[in-house]
Length: 517
Image (cartoon, rainbow, N blue to C red; front, side, top):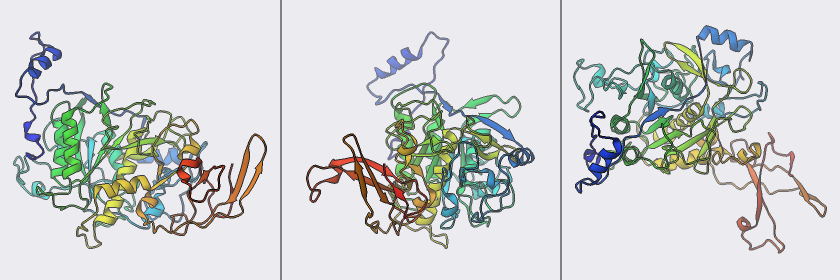
């Protein structure tokens, strides 16, 4: 931490009633030559979304009339409400929904169901640490659990941090928060335990499966009044540092600055950089965790804006936009050229049941929608990938899998049909996240050569058609997209990238059908 310069930061407090404004205080301190950086502490807020809390019984009654039956025999989990989670496997049953507008999770589970050596820090409201569908997959600090109450048993600077730490109240009492609990449920609700819902990285029901979630609480709901408090000082940065120092390699975030700014504060930037550069490593830079370095994942926000919004648009952050059950950009989702991928976030503007269904405090379940709900899908998929490539089957660390490799797999593990379904050209990322594609190994076998190419032309246009060809090492065995190149000269020896007239994504379900436009 000293090598990263984190010991040089101080918070300065002043009496607001002493005729000293923030501007005056800022000006006074910038005049001191001994100080390298002076900045105001920006307020933050959680990314709001629609909320519909339901008990398990209410959810079963309400959803039973909306989406009867179960999903498919391919589902490898006995969680009774899994079939409410269309965002994992969408068969197009809802009004305005389309088959395949999901994260293709069932296919991914055939490859990997996760190992507990992977730790995801949920930097959000507190996770309900008593929820029966979450308990098994919570990170446990064994030294504090088995130590003396009120003492820092593991000497990490934090007292009684059994499942994480409450950075609002600055104690180890992590308290249930609706937003944080819902996010955590999508990341890693316990799978195949016969109750509730399933999590992306929730394992297969056995104690040795499923990743572990560390609750780094920066939003707090008063259990008596319901009033919300938000961490607004140096403790926000401390959450990232704590997570990295205690074994997390993935940081899940669904918050933003309370006012629009185009630049990350230097203190937040250094804390985020610390997580990226030091998570999974010891003080000498040697890999000790399942990922060599860390990844910080953020929701883009719910203001339907094309703007550089912070912290999500910081270049070292992996950012997630939201799409609905019909592949279209969710009406609320922020977007921009800085976005990395899109994930299902649901929307109440569609049919009932098309919000995201997950855990809710006090053993209940509920619907929410927003980029906050899209983001944990990607954090869960990231955990699946790290589990497969960073942990051996016996639970030992498999060295050499880096945060850049994970970054590339998440961007590469997408369906690139995003522009097809969004003709308004919203820049929502490189594609729709696909859990199975992120896990499989591409053997770089070329697709079959295009055949049956036909062209019909007039003086206005040319209509091309061809048969979709097979790609033997693709997850669905079909070519993902085609590049059309135009030239007045023979194509041999020319750079097709400079001649491109556009990319044609393929929507058909099997190879061999006709495509074109």
